[in-house]
Length: 103
Image (cartoon, rainbow, N blue to C red; front, side, top):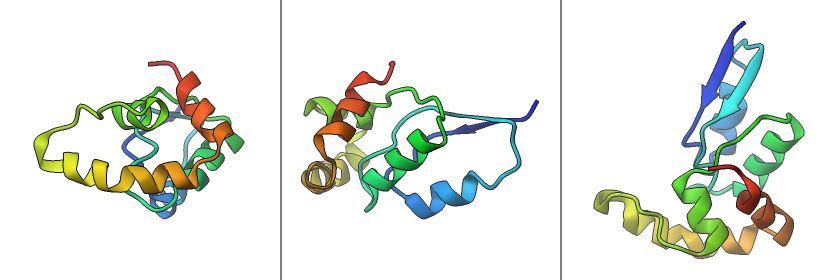
């Protein structure tokens, strides 16, 4: 069985689509679907449509619960800069999806 582990998507829909083309029997996402990139909604929708299990990452948690991302100093400013955009893009259903992900 080929298991595809994906993580740190950070709202990069094109990259997510590309990596999902890698031959696999099952995919699992280790979190960080959102923050930084332009398409958090499309990434969430694709993972949900393909019924890929997801573990809530620190950026998913930060967006879902409006808390600090606990990321390193080097990238924290990027997370803060894109957070408002992410909240504008995600509707209530997608925010609740992030909130319900297991950690």
